[in-house]
Image (cartoon, rainbow, N blue to C red; front, side):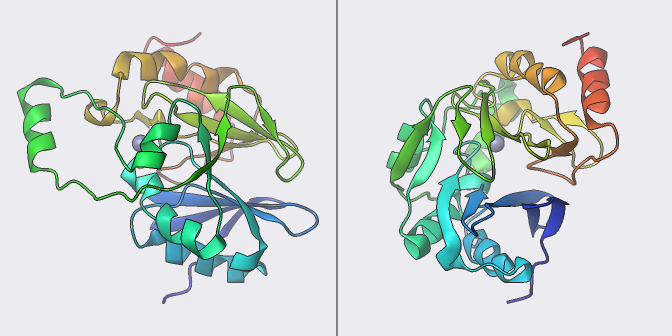
Length: 239
Ligand SMILES: [Zn+2]
């Protein structure tokens, strides 16, 4: 397997590009070497994420916690493999937990005729049921690498969250706003409630962070908060 280099975002925090920069997983490491993984990509990406640990001097045996921003197949698809390899269950927001447990996708808006057609022709990815180890709530501070804050932003899916690593100021954004080629909203057709997705994204403009680590697209290190705020204001959400 081709070696996947991890991109260091801050001391103890890495992004692992799983499908170039379009699909990302994240690694956080405690001072004592314990490793937390956030999002595991599409089916097949679990192997890639675990293999990337080698490039930062860790191994799958160091992993003690698995977290998900939400239960879409490009975040959860690789999780079954990782769960099997590590013997761990997922940490996911309480409103998302049943999708993980049952291997079902969160509801999506079928937007207009085109949206409904897309849903019909899009091959559905079979998701395996995966055990949930912990149900997360908004504002919870997880004992991960010095403190990882759960930020609930429902809409993209009911239990969609971002994670703010408070010691370093790295924010794993989740999918409300993506950065594939510049900032943009997640596609309406994959959201449970697109209006709510945009409304709750205002939290991305209010949090204090130094690196915006997008789940889709490369990170923004130069004035990320200002760029996100400008994006929100331009679209009438914020200011
Ligand atoms: Zn998503």
